[in-house]
Image 1 (cartoon, helix red, strand yellow):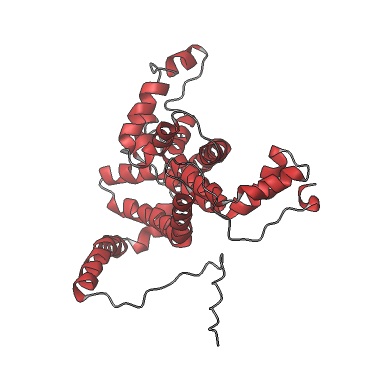
Image 2 (cartoon, helix red, strand yellow):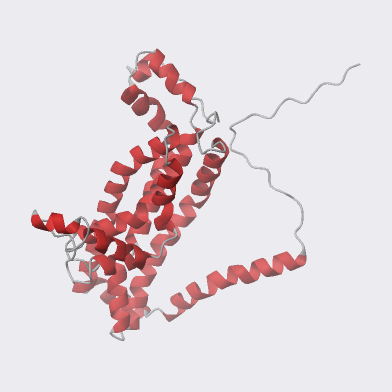
Length: 308
């Protein structure tokens, strides 16, 4: 009598194995200390909040202008990140060319670069006497102290989050699906629009929200490159800093709670998806950074009706 082999586990179910091993006491103790290290400052912020003046702090004229400008700036940065970030992620994930590692390093550098340094770099490049800015000035285009300045500064620091998320998703897409679409008569744009985009839509959404939240909280690059002009370049983080300088901690704490709430919602909603996308991107990448043949975990067989 021969033993029957257990059926192979289904791929792409999305379930993770959870270890039932009990961690040692010292690891639990250090983990609790680490968690408290992050939780206590946030609890202190909530404890010091002037709840009696929250509404007046949020509805004052300068605060409304700062909130409005932050929304415009972060949305503008998101649009630029999507328009330029999707092609960049696609090129990085699907092609191989000389200097690719350098390009990847440059596009992810703002994630670890101090934002103030990024603002100085933007000033040196796009300022009135900058490498490119001086030629723009001759054409009548002045970026510093203009609405475009905080938008560009926010794009500089937020686009890497979007590109990295989308690139990781593109590396997990089975290119045979796109080849099948080409066989059925779809061009490159048709295959990308009807096959690739639907497969990476969750990563597009999560990367876009993450980039938007990062742009909303940008401070260092904005104040260095755009200045702190009320109604023109003074975003919400800059307004919080200004209130703190003017010995008005109540308003600064209230508006800090707004940024904290937005950031917390984004992190809770997208953290697992974003980190999972990065891990999938690493698994789908070979040693030279090229995409590997990692199949996607969804059933997305292109048909003639789909790509017609």
